[in-house]
Length: 423
Image (cartoon, rainbow, N blue to C red):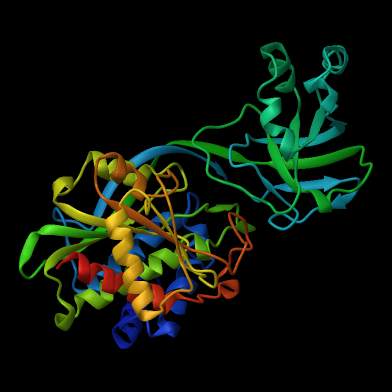
C-alpha cells in the first residue's frame, strides 16, 4: 500500500510539477502535508518520518542531488508524546479533545477522579493567604488556574512547589484559543489545558485520563538537496523551511500545521521545482534544507550548523521560509535591520513590481531556523507573511482555512531577490 501511495504521488507530481503559478499543485502539497496520514508531522505514528520521506521523494523526482551521498541527515533527541487521545469529563459533561481541551505537551500519565481545587491567586501577594492555601492536602485534587498565572506558579517558593506536585492533576484555563507546543521532558504529573469558555461554571469534580511516554532518543531527519551552480558552484544560496509540526495526541487529535509550516515547506518545494528546470539553472549552487524538530527548539537547524555538509562560510545568503500562507498585510523580514543593504535591495524589488502591500523589518530573533545560522555568522533572512489567519499551534491551523493570499507574489519576490544576490 505504501509503495502504491508513493507511485501515485510521483505520477501526480510528474504531471503537475511547475511553478508557484500552479496554485492547485501548491494546495495539493499543503493538503498532503496536513493530512491525517501525516498525523501532524510529529512524534507518534511516524508522522515526521512520513513527511521526511515525502520531501525526499519530491527532491528525487525533481532530479535534485543529495549532499554527502544521502538526502537524509539523521539526528536524535528526547521528546514527550501523548500516545492516546486524552479524556476529560467535568461535572458530568464530556469535553471534546482538540476542540475544548488538549493535554499539555509535557504532561505525564494519569487517570481517575479528582476534586477540583481552584487556585487562590492571593498566594502571589499575601503570605498569610499562601500559608493557609498550602496547608491543605493536594492529594486527589485537580488544581485549577488560569494560563496567566502559570508562570507565577513556577516562581513560588520551593516548599510550595513540592506541594503543587502532590496534586493528581493540573488544569490550565486558556482564555482565547488552545495553544500547545513540543516538550523535550516530562512534567511530574498530568497537565490538561482547557479552553476557558468550555469549562463548566462551579464544577466540583472531574474524571480524566492521559497516557504519555517520554522518548529519550527519537530519531528524525533533516532532508537536504541541491542544484549545482553553472558558473560559481562553490558559492551557495540556501533556502530553508521546517517541515515538522506538533504531531498529535492519540488517533483522535492531531495538529495539521498548515500555515506552520506546510506553507513554508510548499514554498521550498516550489522553489526546488523552479530551479530544477534547465532554463532556470542558477549561477550559484542552491541548497534546499527541510528541517526536522524546529518546534522542539530549532533542533534540526542547530544540528546542521554543528554538522554542515559544506563550509558555512561559502553561504552567500540564506532565506528561511516559515508561516507563508497569508500576506494580506505584507511580509515581515527578520534580520532586515541587521542586513540593511540586502533588505534595501529586497525593498527595491518589491516596490518595482508591486508584489506585496508592504515589507516590514525587525532585528535579530531566535524564532525560526535562520537563527542558528545567524549565530554562526551566516547572513540570513526569515520571511513570514502577515494578516489573514490567527490559527496557530492548535487543530484549527488546517489547510482549508489557509488563504495563500500572496503565495505567488512571495515566490516571485524570492526568485528576483535570489537573482539579484547572484549578480
